[in-house]
Length: 270
Length: 294
Image 1: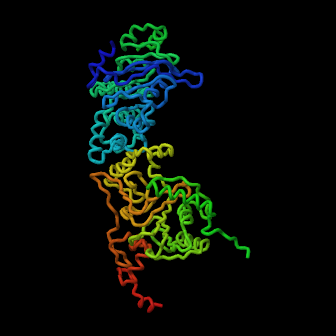
Image 2: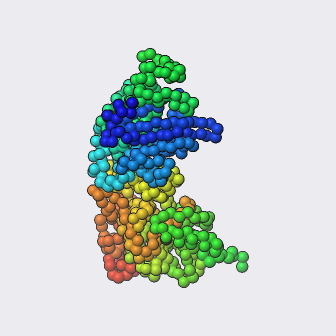
Image 3: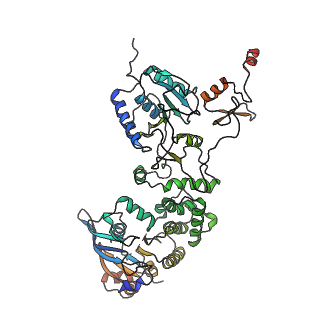
């Protein structure tokens, strides 16, 4: 139900899932960080994973983006040629290529996702050079048009991100990820550590980009407001399990599970 | 006689064997950095311990050794390494590029063309071309393995963004045999084209970093660049003040404390050979004049 509604915003074959997880689990010894997660993500759909610290959100994100190998279950992804592939069966070269082209990964701390010592232009251009772009002028033009899209003054294209503010860094990180026109973006607490007005601006920007580009996104957040603004669907996690899933409005306005009710009611009234 | 007796060329035979294996592997995979068990040498790191170990491993009794430092045969580093092998291996030494069978070098490739059968041994401080962009060795090795060299262009991009042209003047990255990106050691980029399709075998030894790599004879070596900012050589636009050469790489020599300077060939053998053939530059002292002063 949720899938068909969201599919309208997608690009191309939106009736087929972009990414599916089946019985996904990860254990560290006898600690189950994440267990039995199954879902399908469709093109153009934004899924939020919410839950408190230690609920397994970040582990799940790393499993989905093939940075961790699952102890149980599997993740499949529809490659650009339309073939569904099991991520565990991909070679390292293929996986890294996917990561550089068809996927984006926005870290909570921009310093993890950026090269802090090289200029903003080179940060955005790196992915292009990695896929063989060999024309300085074109790389620079593309980089500067992306800086404009994420509302960074193009006059600062030659400044290193270490001279940028937190909000600018996060926007630069987004531009760096989107320059190869990925179809799926993973975001790990994209607004963490930013003040409220900067958060609002960033969320607005992300919402526009996601709908303009028809991106699918998986956003991990503990901030229900972020989930409400960005996502179409929400998955609530607790103790490594998905306890509730559904349309964002439905889950946040009318939560069924006691834990979700607690989560929703613990938002401070504005 | 209490003088210590060394094995031929200082290193023991087992060590040389280990280094030769690394060299053979390096030749088999052009541009790939082969790890080897680098030894302590009787000289400090940074003085060519890697090059010396490679030279020691390949030197035979009938080899003729030439050692250059920044193109010169008569600087401290060149003289001490030459003496080292004259003493421990008893091999013949020369300053003549054509006569030498093994040439150990720091920072330069001789001006004259090298011929088949010669081996050029480079001293390398930092073998990893990606080092200052990516600090993790595990990651750079993976990038080499998968041929992910986008990052190398980031460095060149930064140069153009900052200076308007590719300002990297030495240790200019090259792609060897259309596969591995390699740091050609801190030679000026002027020398990069000489590496391409060279008739001699080129070996690179990094002692502190414990890596050996190689370019076999007649292998393609391409300097990285952008389509709209192609690779260019750089040479100061002046003839050599001693031999008048207009095509050699020049050293700038300050001649007094009033800002006077002259430019002379950095390859001393090339310069002397030309002078003995009668070529003259603006600063050449005529031999009879000197005698008149004396």
